Image (tube, rainbow, N blue to C red; front, side, top):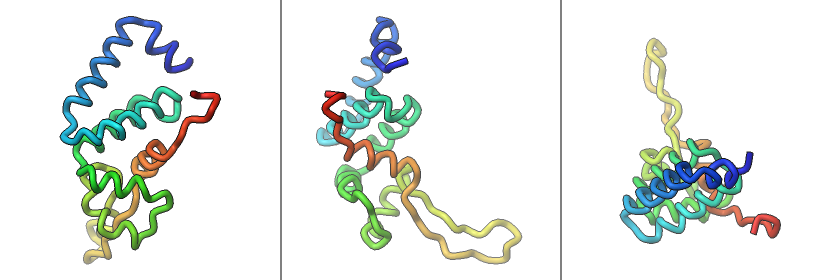
Amino acid sequence: MSFSSEHLSDPKKAKRLGDAVVLLLDKLDDLAKSAMLAKVFAALVRGKIDVGTFRRLAAAIDIGFFEDLSAFAKMLQPTKDEMRALYPALVRTGLTEMKGAAMPGEGGIRKITCEVSPLGITFNKCLNDEPSQAEV
């Protein structure tokens, strides 16, 4: 079932979706974030992501600093060196994650590292994916 037939054919669903998008836009602390949210919403409409992923990405955009989110979005294949400064700034958003803490009973702390999370990969794809001519 396509997004439009599922969400727009039912007036109640369409209104609820419209209200949710308005609430998301109203929460944003930087007008430039609305363009990011629009790209993520476009990925939802095109069936590239599901509603749960849309909500997670919307929350990440809401709580992240625009400059950090923008710098991350410009990195198509981010290297560890390029990401070094952004890892700690993006952990709270869920776009990066910490790995490597020792498990209980392992006797010590291993090196803790950061990496781009699966949500971060999806964020980058959404912000850099241009619709094909068939989708326009």
